Image (cartoon, rainbow over all chains, first blue to last red; front, side, top):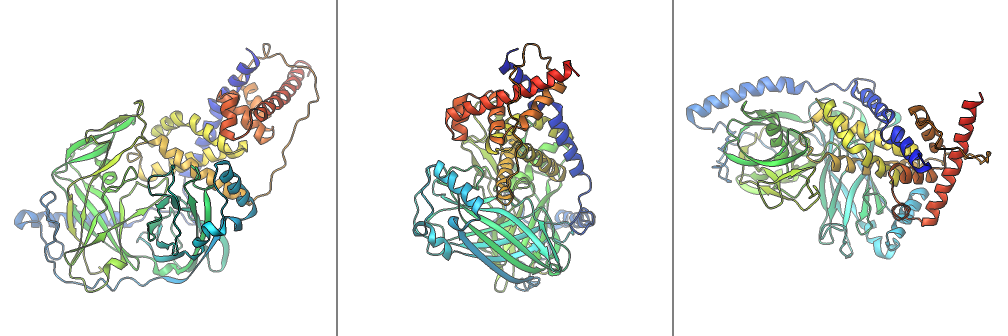
Length: 459
Length: 174
């Protein structure tokens, strides 16, 4: 064994192939998967709401099916049309509430700052500048990027679902006023030259100087020179305390995609720090559930049972029932979809493919649900971004409060299924195949999968 | 079920992710910590929401690692540089690699010595010997000259040889 072979073998036995690294990770995993603690020392318990909601929803479902068997799917104020044959125009619904009266807005104060690269903390400035130079990026000057100082960030809403452990969700509008034209990047997708990414999020509680992290928010939204701004909603992996005045600070990076930067960090040209104070006691929304029966043949992207890739399968969705959790708050209406029921013939993998396909997932821009107010299209629902590693796990959409102004006699959404494809619907991909998963993929959206009327009045 | 899946994904991905972490984080402990944090978050995620919506575990973990590295940079910016212990060349005698019996204990010993090298030296050592990257590739990836890579390798080899020689002498002459 020569010297090179010796060192290679030593690293193989220790760092690379040894059991110590895996044992260390296993220990950390075991520690993490034991009970997680809240900052106040209490346990993170699963929300009791689903356990109450399931039998209640099952009873509602039974009642719905009884009505359906005896006289169609329409029921008072909650008309559910059959998928496939669904008309995009909802049937007139009974006016049984006023959506303009939502839960009290909990925001008490809000502010933001914008710093350009030369104003970053010294070490961060050095890191970003060095990287930028190494990638051939031009210096960040006031002349080129000063327009970012005129940008505005505005909190459109914040909410926490009903459960005590439900994560914090917030929606922002970022408006880069006085935007100067900038060139298109070779690195990013056409037209996408800047990214707006969450760098960090944390909160403090009045009377307590400790800063608690809000994790799982790392995600980015791209925008180009033609964009008039970004509207996005983020979801953390933590809930805020149930009461008290809480100040949340979110730091967003504005990333110049001309600088190759897989970390989405070194390419930062500006940092936006957004702070808002809210009354945590007024955060919780009021929640109801609506059942959504599906039917017809549809393409789904299904994980292979061997976990060696995925394939598209055309499946009958007859007998599949979704649960749409409808949570009303000052931010708007949050819809969370889960599969309530599926035929026994459906495998666990096929069943799990439904929530994934309900999203306009990250493989391409699929179709978000369409909103109908008083029977008229009113834009698309906004997908909630959970950030890695939670993004994609739960299909969740927001009907923003801005879509719900004025007298409302009916409110509905039209949902779609989105599957991954490279142009061929019967796409089949394995990890061993030559074409990598990052080869161009599209999202194929089905014909409208369902139309559902949402309850107007708060329960 | 989730643990089986986790173990399979770990086996398939850890080497590539570690290489990525070592390439992007100069401090050896930071690279291993980042990897640990990523796998812990990944496990937490599949415990909470399952894994059947994760079609590309490798890409999924890669994205997580990228964010973890960014987070590390942000934290590093705010902390003082750690003093690094540098071993001086105190012994002239070379160890004979032919005679060394490479068991797990010695392998761990080599890793411990390597981690005590200056971080940039350790990084080059692991990339060259562990991941068997060429000097040219390392230079290109780290954006440094080939001479810098060679000199770090030379320093690493020299230091480790001396440490191993001392260890061997202690074994033979307690």
